[in-house]
Image (cartoon, rainbow, N blue to C red; front, side, top):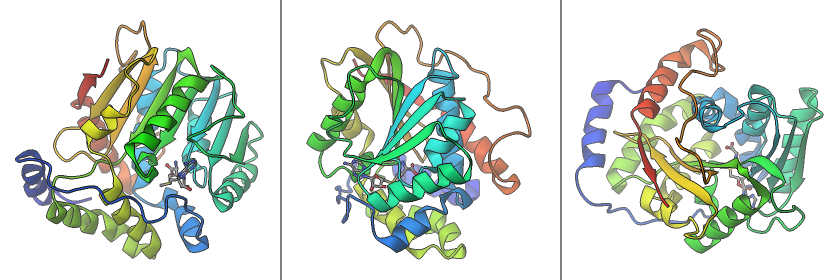
Length: 297
Ligand SMILES: C[S@@+](CC[C@H](N)C(=O)[O-])C[C@H]1O[C@@H](n2cnc3c(N)ncnc32)[C@H](O)[C@@H]1O
């Protein structure tokens, strides 16, 4: 983890001045190259495991009934986030969907290896969930994948579909990276975080991360993909300083607060990250606790 002294100049650069870095869409929207799939399958060894823990705890805090129910995770990749989400929130059932057949095979194998029969992974396109009916799910998620959509119009289709298949009293959560303000800042950030991937022998994962940072949406672009006539109440949550993540949360229209609880999901010492990552998790939690939350409709 970079120290506060290393981060401070980046925080200053991110927060003063206009957005200069234009978006470069992902070279390959679908991840089916075998080396990339194999390296992504090792995601739980990396710092992304911390973002997953933060995401699961954020979903827990935003759900009215935190445990159980039926969930959909689109763009599920090798399924590690889906599996952790299902286990930690004690979901009754989860369907994971990805356009990449190799990702779906790896996700299915991962669930089977863990003896989880309530998870099902299938090939499918998040932009047209034709085989799923309206209001089928209590929770729908898309994690680290909004930046894989080639345009805002395509992203709008995904949000429309997630909104449609989720019950009015359910929750839609989209988590993704944030495109930083300048190229120089992005390169420094990738170098800082990518160090971990290099050390672990994951060069393709590092290349994917770098592409993702250039393909990520700014918070205002992500917000603009929400349907203005949605029957859900949408919020954008962005940690302050150097935003490592952003959340778009669609909650029931009559919700009085974004988060229904403040308590942690895990007891002290039971957080699902390695001992060496506890400090980063604490820092992530702190930035989420002080994040800006904006209602979009
Ligand atoms: C960066 S991975 C994220 C995987 C997983 N959600 C996670 O958080 O670890 C993005 C995934 O989105 C998938 N993808 C891209 N476009 C898609 C689409 N239109 N429908 C379904 N999956 C898609 C890719 O194949 C890839 O597996």
